Every structure is written in structure tokens, then in C-alpha cells.
Length: 259
Image (cartoon, rainbow, N blue to C red; front, top):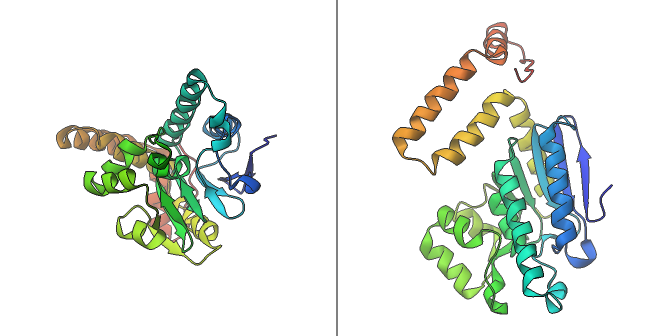
């Protein structure tokens, strides 16, 4: 159904593969449109997915934009492409389900920006991250100049963006961008293991936790704490909360229904 990505469903887990291995999964307008459509499908509940993993086929996660397309682009076409990419990053961020980036190989430019929009990044030892747009006299256009400094601070972000240098998985872990490093080829398996842990929990609680953290970071502490209290009270009246407590008392796995 897609030309540049693949969607696999595994019992409430959706795995989306960037699948242009001959181009190191470089982004073009088709990739953005197909990923956007795929995310809408996941959000609609058609696949009953409660966790999403993004990963890449072959030697890369996403090695940035397909630069060949820039040669003949007009300014209007370039601006439209940038808006399309920005919209996809925001879709990932706003998706109710947690999104895990399983990074194998290169995550550069737009690929790094996709990972930054995800909720968790797991990387193989051979992963490389960077925003090298300045080497082409350009800037990151998918949120890199804004999300990266919010995560690592302005000084580190400026160094990476000004220099265009790449960092490896170990440095990304030190900067707290990456939560886990795996052996080469094992990032997806580690992401699936994490997904299983998330899927064992109440889906309403997980979705609300994502929303509270994302929105709370943009609010004052007092306002964010009020959001948290309201959300906790909402969950207290849910069927899942009653099931979770009863299962705990019965010493059995809970059977959550998302209600």
C-alpha cells in the first residue's frame, strides 16, 4: 500500500519501516506524505496499535533529505516540502500512542529531527546522529533548531548545528538523547522489548502520561501540576483502574480495555 515505507502490525504494536535502502532511506515528499497517511491510520485506531516503533530498512534510520531533489526545486516547492516535513514531525509528537525510534546507522538532518520528535530513542552502537545542513548553507527545517536545544541545552545544540558534526550513539546517550544502546542490528529488538513493557500497562494512563509530559513542559509548574491532578482523577474513575487494582489483589496479569 506504500512505496517508501512499510507498516507491520504485531498485537497492538505498529512498526513503521522507512524503506528506501538504496537511498539510505532519504526523505522526499512521497516519504512524508506516506508517513503522514500511515500515522493518521494509526491514530484512527484502525490497527488497534497502542505503541509505535519507527525504524529503517538497511544501513540507515533516515540519512536526511534526498538532496538530488533540491537541485531543481523552486523556492515555492522547497517551502512546501519544509511545511510537509514540519507537519509530520508534529504528527509524531501529537500522536496519542508512544512512539519509539529504533535507530540503526545514520539519523541525519530530517532523520535526526524525526527521532527528536519521538518519545524514546533506542540506538545501535553504529548509529550516527547529526544536523549537517549548514554544510549545504541551509538550516534544519523540521524542528532541529528548536527541539534539540530544549533537550540538550543551547550550547550543545549550537555546537552541533554550527559545526554540522556527527555524534555516535555513546555521545547521544551521554547527552540523554538516547535511553539505551544496543549491539548493531539489535535496536529494533530492544524497542520491541520496551514496547511489551508499555503494552502491559493501562493504555489510558500511558496516553495521558505522554500528553501531560509534552504539554506540561510548555506550561508553568503550577499549571502542569493542576493538569496532572485532573488527569489522575479522570483515571481513578476508569474501568481499567478498577481492573488494575483487582488484578493486583488477585496476583494475576490485568486485562485492560482502554476504558
